[in-house]
Image (tube, rainbow, N blue to C red; front, top):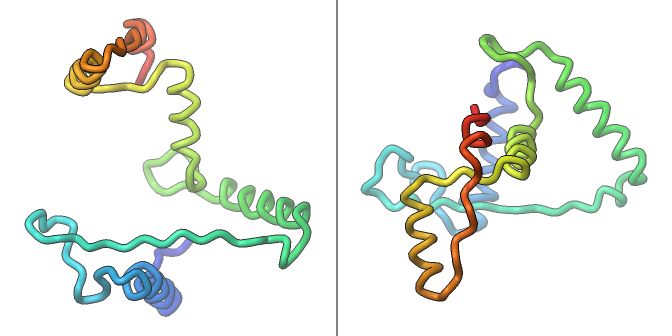
Amino acid sequence: MLPFGGPKGSAISLIIDVLCGVLTGSAYAMHLSTLENLEAEQNLGHIFMAMRTDLFMTKDEFASRMDEILRMLKSSPPAPDTENVLAPGEIERQNEAKNKVLGVPLAASVIDQLAALGAEVNVSFPNAISQKAAEARP
């Protein structure tokens, strides 16, 4: 894949800005602050969309075409210093599977806060994952 830019990248950026900023009443274009400016209100907008693919083609045809484009993506050369190409959401699915086995990692301060809140309503905090499972995490 080529770097995101040029006329197509500009058009996609404009569409995103219109949908997420102009349409939602949030900041857009030059009204946006930088994420590094922690003093400024960010006023970021988001938009979510659902689309009925069966209005365009059958469910099976869409699934087949999606499988094909994902195979194309996964077979493309990875970026320098990376092992493989990942599809959107792939890291999250991998982490979810790992967390189902090993448990959700929490900072000690968060565990203390949750345990204290639970104690206030007479709900005990569940046992932490075993040390062996914690050591298995990368």
